[in-house]
Amino acid sequence: EREMISLKEILASEVFAKSDSVLTMGLGKDINGLPVIANLSKMPHLLVAGATGMGKSVGINAIILSVLYKAKPDEVRMIMIDPKIVELACYADIPHLLTPVVTDMNQAASALWWCVNEMERRYSLLAKFGVRNIEGFNKKLKKAKNKGEPLLDPSFNSNTAEEGETAPELEKLPLIMLVIDEYADMLGALAQEDRAKAKRVEALIVRLAQKARAAGIHLIIATQRPSVDVITGLIKSNVPTRIAFKVSSKVDSRTILDQGGAEQLLGMGDMLYMTPGISHLTRVHGAFVDDDEITRVVDFLRKNSQPNYLDGILNAHSESADSHEGSNSSGVTGELDSLYDEAVQIVTSSRRASISSLQRRMRIGYNRAARIIEDMEASGVVSTMNSAGNRQVLAPEPINTDD
Image (cartoon, rainbow, N blue to C red; front, side, top):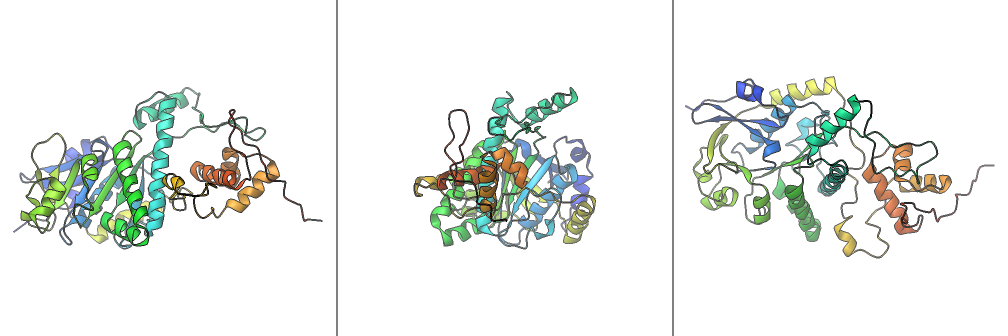
């Protein structure tokens, strides 16, 4: 009779306790009864696949709870994409979330665009401060703060800033864990609406998998449909760490692991773990966590801290970069931001077209403010940026109707 392995047992193990990484995941036990843990930051991304009812969802929950056990909200932030609506709903409003659990697939596309933009922003910061990765940046930031010389945002432009406005201090960059619980469903839902959009979203996933490691962004992609049109060669080549639960055929096993074996697993959390640098697969009996345990953990987290959602992730213009090629010359990328009219009022009244000013006055994130300014440029409200980095406000001042 098979023994049930609780996640609590893995989290209490010495090997888990000794792991320094906040992205340490408790997977289960190997055939010798020893705890198996993994470090997502070294993978740096993870693909999880298996047939329905074979333990994939429980495995994802065990991974998420492991990270929640290790990491504070300022160390790891999460974005969860849940096409099935119910799989990740239990994590709603935990303080680690960057945005509410995403169940709308158009919003999921926006969230992925935000991740790509954030990755590029982080790479720009790393380059400007001469460090190779997020750990190096945070160390440099902490050292400067301890010396009383905090690092300032290099993107701040004093020429477009308001009078008395100074460059904001840079803050610690947390690691970002992006969890997609059913990748095939996400692509399928997008393809029904717009096949080209689904392809662009797939390209975003590949782009993140290729480049996001040094920027501190890590993907966990799960699917119950391990077909070659879902788990493509590009995905596999950029996500070498994979977990396969029991599948229905050898073909499916080869799609996930490049070899057979997963079709012979016993189900109920029995998995094969493939990691780069090790020639053989590791068979693991997955740790079990029930709904009551998840509820207790998330209730504790909610009581101790409120979520601090970042503005603009779900209403980003998901078509912004790639669709410029096919869009009209105006450059407007789709529907205008809900705050666009208010932002125009601020810019035309103050006669300053500054991203930092919009951020401060409207209390929105950098990416959202930048997109609004870009749309103003496309609409002729402000000019293009000159060589000094300044924009001229072209639209007239608003008429004051107050008597």
